[in-house]
Amino acid sequence: MATNSIKLSLIFLLTIFITSKAILHDQLKETNMTLYFQDWSGGPNATVLQITGHQDHGILSFAKFGSVFVTDDPITQAFDKNSAEIARAQGIYVTSALDGKISHVLISIIFTNNEYKGSTLEIQGASPQFERVREVAIVGGTGKFRLARGYATFETIHFDLAIHYVVIQCNVTILHY
Image (cartoon, rainbow, N blue to C red; front, side):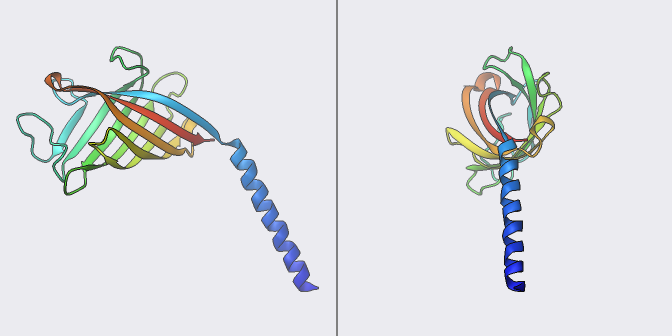
């Protein structure tokens, strides 16, 4: 009799747990966005600077193991650098593979536009920096993206070495509350 009562209690608790997980899952929202990082690696208004590692003639050495970079890129709503800024990408990149092909990325996307102002997305992970499309995890967020998880893809869509200017398209898929 006591065994049946224990089994019934366990089944009841398991049902409550499964039901509560289903209710929470139904509350998750999915948000998809395309963002454009406006990256300047030289000149008086540089938005990415190399902190460690050797630079050759002012060119950043992204492929040298141990190189560390800090960034504060404006993020715009369209490809054009003159389009409205909606966020900033602030963080660090570290060339973490001996052969220089992988960069470890720690980036906070800090929204400045009206819709998401003050909210953040936290991006972290290994990025195969010379691949056409790189995928990195979204590991958290704040504000409207509280408890975010998901992924971001990065693709360099414009590169002008003469003026040290790059546009990186970032597509994000986020699950959040």
